[in-house]
Length: 267
Image (cartoon, rainbow, N blue to C red):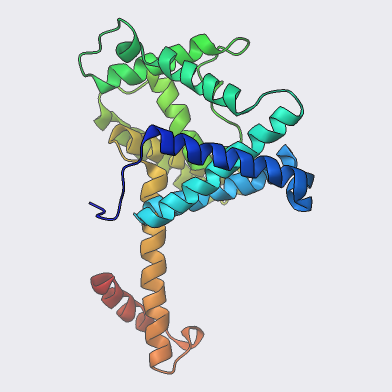
């Protein structure tokens, strides 16, 4: 527990939020850079901020998480201020929209629906209610953003398909599919048909994402853990070679493997 943390009253929280709104309004009026920005111009910055928050979460760095959440909140206020300038919406409309959505999607909290503490039932109801919200697009997969990173997109596609019953009867059955897809990729690799190899490798990835979902593992988080582990071990390898006055390009694979095995024990 953070001993320096102070609990704040709702009045204090609202005061700081109002201060942020006032600062944003002044920046749009008086700062040349802020005044020139559009929804399109800061979109990529918003994506970057989301990834920086993700990095902080994976690092379990609460101080950085706080900072990155502030950066994301700034972007929400920025978009809302621009929306008010064009008289399309403002921060009130943004808050009202999410409040109404949360109440609608939680009938087991705000309504009469009883889920008996079943998280799976909550998620099933959530997806069904999302479909009811879609006016012109009531397809099951219609709510998956096209611009999602491919690994996360595959996971969300499979989650949504499973929410309507399109899933394995037993999760262990997925391994037959994984083996089948690997075999099909190997068959195309033997022929060296690059187009079909790419197609089949995509199927391999998709089946592995499915396996991760069925075993309650987020594949994006799992892969990032491996990325970080590899970076740390490779940095160890590089540091060891520098200590010995060597260059990685001059070392044999056997020499690098020997250091790599030590890195696996230490990192």
